[in-house]
Image (cartoon, rainbow, N blue to C red):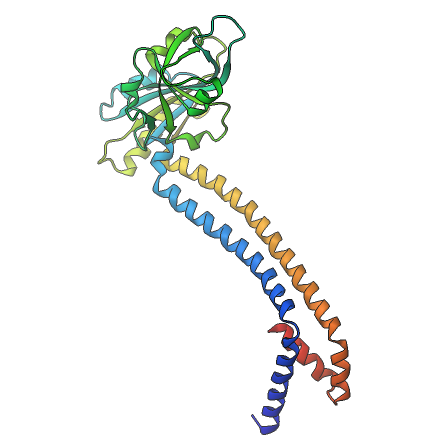
Length: 325
């Protein structure tokens, strides 16, 4: 680099610094606009990655089992025979329906009532994850002698405490505990009411299972701890062959449930990504307006530099370089 070129670069540097001194606030706004958009995109990417990692780590807990058979009808006799021939499998039967619970102490209508999501459990549920109740105990210990476990929301809405009476269908029950956490609740994100747990033996007197009742039947299966993933895939294929591809049942493993949740997460991430991209676009508009206002405010300085002898190309290079920086 020659001496003349070094002097030109030094002059350009001094002029850029001089022009920058009067535009600190605009420069700060410029950086903030850019930071908002970039931060939004980075946050969406980080949130998606963390959720995907957590889903992969807790896949079995999201289903509370290794495999689930679900449908609007009880499993067929062929499925029962197949499961009975597999003593290595642990089986739990779940029935879920939406109904109404009312205060048991009410003698005359109208009684305080609430729409609930009733979950009838038969077996050692859950196989994976933690079902938290107050008092802390297993469902087999709590759901005895016409006892039910209810979510705290139900107790609040009906103004009843643990030990109070509850009428579900045609039977009276006693609230023996509160439901604090349910491992596979993420499988049913749409909630129509507070959750109530009941044993299969106590469900029969309610007379809620009859022609026309909409009940979701779930059969949860747990493989032995030393079973390999291929054994789970073979079990799923055998069950699909029994129930049929076009039958009323759906067979899925915890891996498939994880994939479905990841697909839903990917769709949500795409939407959030578009929102982040929009914020980046708005930030770009703010940057463009700031640059335009700054250039308009420097017209007098441009005229002054032209009077000092700078050529149009040199003035353009000066402000273009400052804008690029």
